Length: 111
Length: 113
Image 1 (cartoon, each protein chain N blue to C red):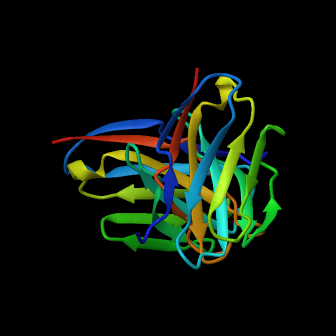
Image 2: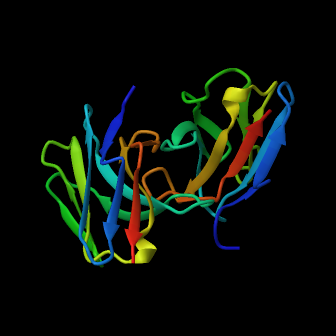
Image 3: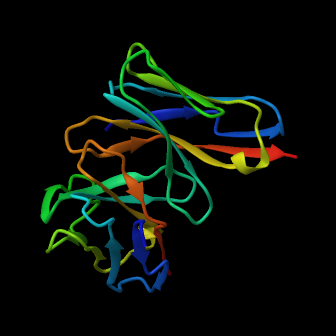
């Protein structure tokens, strides 16, 4: 089935540093999404990307939808302690609406 | 209560028991999804409802898994004769329609002993 490969698996950074994570797929997606999940909670949508090549920002977050529609990256600038959590990329094919998720990137920020 | 709610939040079952997990979607949301999240993994799709119709159940791992949404709002995911490999967090999500943002509930953590 469809799979998303997300990297890195985990990151441990200093507060104030920038972070970059990416996601690749063997299949084309119509929409790329980035979610954050805190312990004991469900994923929360951070950024949605709808067009190949699209670059979208949401505060300190920036994400891009790859030209081939098979990849995406998420950047977090000037990290703060509350950025700690697990970040997931997800692809959406648009037929039934089901999301295909990556394995997640665990981010830890040292104050 | 503006968000998606799920109950129970935690469930411990002995192997072979049946369990029922409940999802209350956001009022007015037509689409409802169930996902299974194993420890250290991303959520995996189980099934999708549009109103009361189950349009996609391709992700259900076996015939022991059954989901329903009889009145197009609350949904129940039932697992019969639970096995240890069923241990996971079960997430429910709802959206205005299948093309819109999916809002997730907090999940039910199922542990099968």
